Image (tube, rainbow, N blue to C red; front, side, top):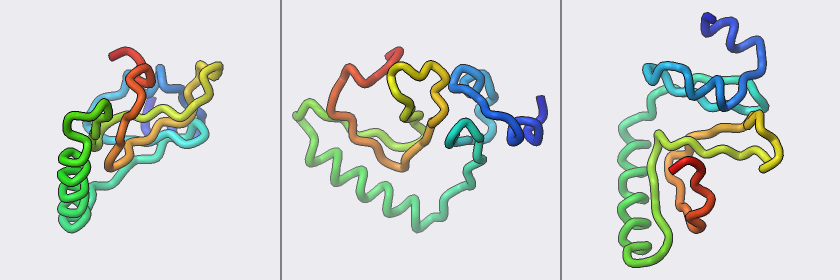
Length: 101
């Protein structure tokens, strides 16, 4: 299936994880959106914030992660998983929120 075809139909998380890692996508309402590369300034700010968060959370039960890191935002009963994003920074406070890890 070509990328043009993907943009015309809703996709699920199960389909998304079968794609190659060459391009990064987020899925909003089942529609894939290709992500562009962030600027140097953006990366510098993300790195600084991640460092501050890591230092603050060190020794606590929370963890900080940076993109690419899939965050699935669908309701538990929605097996389609139509919302998958890759935030620049994620702080995970509840270990059971990790699915499959």
